[in-house]
Image (cartoon, rainbow, N blue to C red):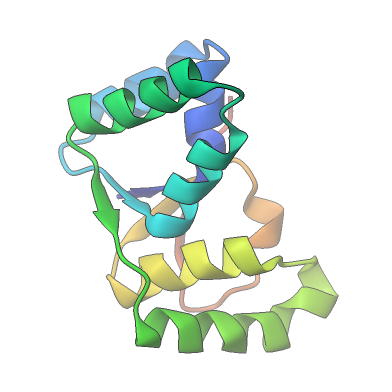
Length: 125
């Protein structure tokens, strides 16, 4: 399963349900886009270290940005940005999930639900 950025934010805010979801998952993945968003949101070096330590301690695999992911994400922007306000970061995350044949878990399903080839699992905090 690949986790959207919002799941990590729920964990940081103390949401036990999000923490249990991650804890119960055997294989944990995130896109490089999510990794960069998490690091970018850190306010200081301590938070930066917390993000990196959390990712490492739960054995998350960071999936790289590939040419195929970039191509698919650009198609998603063309097809869905007007109808669902899909942003480039979310398109990259969705494309990463599809290219790696994984289910994406997110509480922000409104941005992803129109993408036909995406396997999406809704998280309800």
